[in-house]
Image (cartoon, rainbow, N blue to C red; front, top):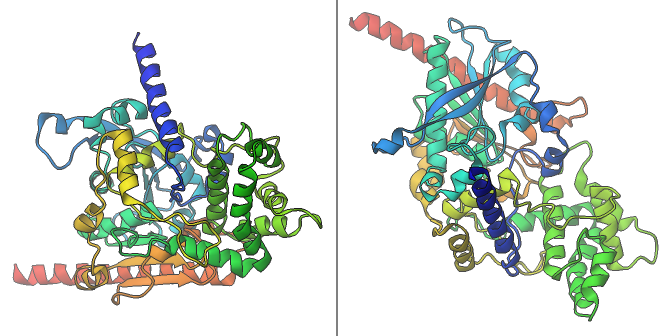
Length: 507
């Protein structure tokens, strides 16, 4: 009976997500965050990446459900996963740091194989490596299953960024105690949403972390701090710089889709032309699918493959005489592969843990007002509509989003002044071809709160594994980041010795 009930509620949640997506009108899907490209994640086999090399040890910490209350239910605990690699650890009695990677809106399994900054630099630092999974993702789920937790209004209320970074603090202190590493400096690292968490952690827990590397962290994309159109303006710029003809074809394609869809059998024609797995019920689903592809290839335009080039070569290289939509489809095939059909829900799968979890997070506190409404955009007008967004979230979760909470809790307005006065030891790294760099910190705030960016870089590229094919500018960016972190650690030990000497003299 319990199994039947669980299955029913699971299906009900999925139905609600699907229904909400369908009735959302012409509000395009928000571009996803994440250090790793979605299409790369889909190709990874969880079974294989869960088989970790012997140097990685998986552990679980009995985590407190609620760090900020003293109600009886607040002391409920759940098992939170973290992974340690001590292969290169120099020991607590050396100047070796602890490098901690903050998991974000996906299973930690992907990060262990997809994030390279820690393992690439562990020998140099003789560092202890730690990876911590974000609550409500992967194997770190309160109440047994993610579906059950998100159905329970009381439990999902603990699914917040503030609770998440408090989790990280508790686990870091536990590890330092376990390894007798009281004085070992901690550097926290994160990418995308995880990069925001790393920066916020340094602000909220400066006594736990010496410094933070926040890769592609759009901490200014809240509460009107960055232009709504900033993200899509960069997507457009990336395409236009890559190929003017590709940009023009995409820009003209939206009206062409509407023109075909207006015919009596228009949706059938579009379904056949784009080989959709199911017949289109509305042309918007095709537009949203294409919008997501263009966003993804711009955001994750990593060398050496450069997926944006791939899709534009497909569009521009279509046989002579191919019509506009035929060229657009050629771009889809070039990027997605020559498949028997194409799922219009490829980027919005209601049973995907990131989709479900991030939907809640954006409907509660992570309200990022992204839209496209610029005359120069290659996209059709679709401004961010906060009122419509609020109605969608209330329909799904029964809560009203708090669009001003992030800036209230972490700081936002006059953030540069705040960082200048109160912050230290944060690297904000960005690539300017990343659309999310429009919400990033792109200038030095102080001597130790610095921006390290590359003109040709893309989303979280600097923390991905090193490759022999890496361009010189990327190698230089990583070298700069490592040098800054080394300076933090050096100064930390100088201060530690000075403090000890003063303590001896005073005693």
